[in-house]
Amino acid sequence: MLHLLRDPRGGTSRAAGGPHSDAAATPAGASPRGTSPRREPLTPPAVFHRPSPGSARLTSTPATEVESPTCHWEAVDELAHRRARSVSARELAYRVTVNWGARVVRSLERLITWGSRVGNPTFFEPARFPWVEPLERSWPAIRRELDGVLAYWQALPAFQDISIDQRDLSDDDRWKTFFFYAYGIRADKNCSRCPVTTGVIEAVPGMMTAFFSIIEPGKHIPPHRGPFKGVLRYHLGLMVPEPRERCRIRVGSDIRHWEEGGSLLFDDTYEHEVWNDTGGRRVVLFLDVVRPLRFPANWINRLVLWVIAHSPFVQDGVRNYKAWEERLDKLVNAAP
Image (cartoon, rainbow, N blue to C red; front, side, top):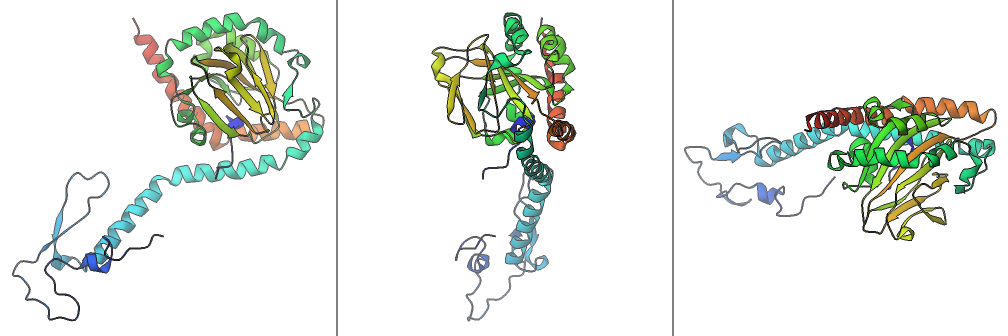
């Protein structure tokens, strides 16, 4: 999940005569300022309260119990704002932590760039990495396990339902996931459903994250970048619709397209984006793998990855995914 840890992109005045203005606060029937007040009615008029969030009815209080209508509206507004702040406090703390962490890991980019044993291109030649060939050789068996997963496509979670920071990239259900690992944390039930896939990915040295990435027709993932050069991004094409050239990825200024059984390996700290301008579904096996580094960059890199794996960013995503795993397990077991 770290690969999508990103910096985010990116008092009101009261109009005269508006619902919060002094004019609007004058009760009906009251005399304008500067004129003689009218005689008080025997029964004080009722002042209606705005319903609080979750309230289904309107309540009233005698006017004599309210200091002034304007003060009452202001008090209710302040209460609503306070409640809104308390509801979003957890998410605010989450985003502050994530953004602070992103700045820290980006400050290490020069060290990682210097220490890289494989250079720093946008795309790497897959043949340079011995662990790629077993993945490509196993792709038909991985594809068969994927077909079993896709039988429950509607139940699969959208990416932003697992990791809330993905809301900046996707706000619909056209980018779905099926996780095996997230920063070394294993999704046991998912792994048991796909034993061949699990065996192959667990043999990859330095594998940190692994999942099926499922993109529906017409989906565009806008430009973004990963925060940290300490991992390499790998895609194994499993389901690639035609025409293949219209299902593509841009990394920096280089554009490639996927092929079934073929590999793409790239540095996700370059700006990248994805298009599926076809009528079919695109699925890849998505891995993040520790970048080969020289000393001391390799030690620092492993420390940073350990910290990220134990951060609220990853731990919240893991909790979300385990909750979804339980729901899928019940659905599968209930099937005839």
